[in-house]
Amino acid sequence: MRPKRKKKANAVDILRRRHFATKEAKAELEEARAGADIARRIYQLRTEAGLTQGELAKLVGTSRPVISRLENDDYEGHSLSMLRRIADALDKRVEIRFVSKARTVQPA
Image 1 (cartoon, rainbow, N blue to C red):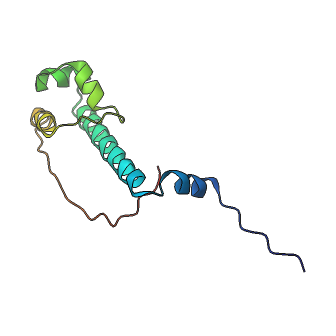
Image 2: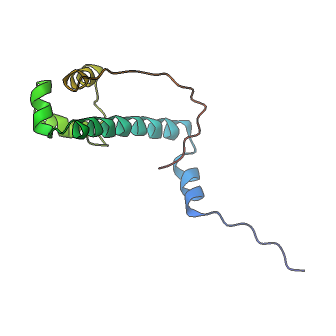
Image 3: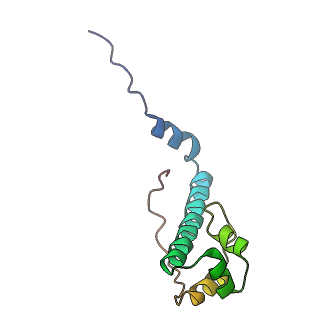
C-alpha cells in the first residue's frame, strides 16, 4: 500500500496564509477595500452624471487632480467633508453605516 500524499495547497491558500493571517494584515486589507470602494463609487457617480473630472472639480470647488486622486483606488485621504461636497454637487447625500466585523475577509 502506498503512503498517502499530503494534500498540496493551492496558490490562493498559500497567499492567504502568508499575507492575511494576522489581525493587522486583515485590518489593512479591509481599510484598503473601503478606500477602493469609495474611489469606485465617486467615479461611478461622476460618470453616471456625465461629468468629466474637471467639471466635477469646478462644481465641488477644487481642482481636477484632486478629483483624480479621490478616484484612485490607492488614495487613503478621503475626508467626510470632501465626500459631502461631492455628494452635494451630484445632488446626493452621504450615508455612513456600521456593519459587523464578522464578515470573512478574503483577498481580492
